[in-house]
Image 1 (cartoon, rainbow, N blue to C red):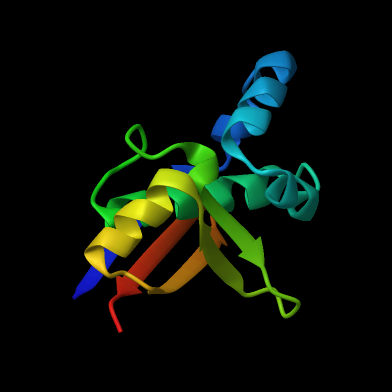
Image 2 (image 1 turned 135 degrees about the vertical axis):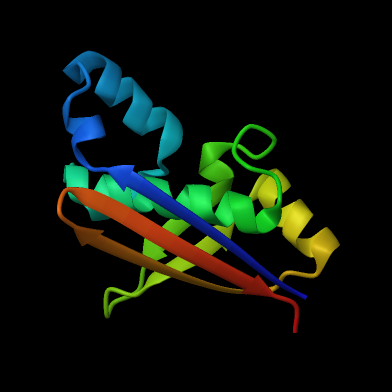
Length: 121
């Protein structure tokens, strides 16, 4: 089985949010590892957000059934994004046999996009 998800986001959306609300949003959506790797950069956070959305679509759940922090996008030493699933997201992936993940994130013209592909081995 192969599953795919995609998402697109204007990077300015995060930058335009009231700073107090933005801080709460970042803590609710992103893991500590993601926050540390993003270094409060709106473009990076937007890319991570899009990747989480894309993964949730590949799972077939969308966000809501799966918590934001159940999907973690970490960057390998070479910068390559990797999917790490926790909680219910990991349970859904296991149930569907989705054990191999690939995610790609891009930024251009004030937009962040991500594609996630999952397959069963």
